[in-house]
Length: 246
Image (cartoon, rainbow, N blue to C red; front, side, top):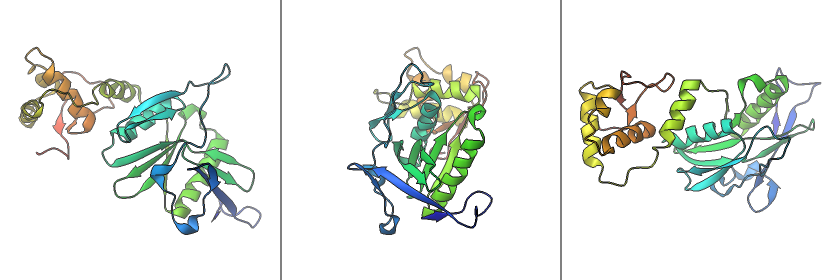
């Protein structure tokens, strides 16, 4: 597979990208037979930690896949959690592929997301203050390699503090409450339709916590929409999402 280097050809030649996936052992993928079976992919690198590591790997319970993902850093956890919340994402793989370029560069991509329409997007995760010239060079090569095979590519950087903390809070409510919830959901939705703000909905709880828990779960799922880029207060506006029965 050939792709142009950033800024065009370098010394009159194109850069070659080799894709290595882990399915039953690591192997170079032949794109002439089509894309790899995304749902059979395993991580090509197992994150480890030692005294010199900047990050501590963690296992993330993933609702999308029903499995756990081995995540390399806290920022990567934020990125994976965002994908896990996206209703259009139907599969997620951590450390899904190793790209090798013929200049000797090697790069393991952080995350893969398969969407319901069949679109596949690779994600690299890097704090804004660590996105140096070398990182941008690899990003350009990776983006070109993805475009050549019909896959998308993006970079997840440092998130606003409010969004990071809001998502951390909402993640604790990602599971649907086990009690009969349809009546509570209708109760909350009707209040939102009538123009209630977050504090108004919280005040509807009769003391058992059901309405409060359902409110945050519905925000997590996107059934209800709150601006997550600013601190959530009782005066925060709240609306019905596209997936509701508004």
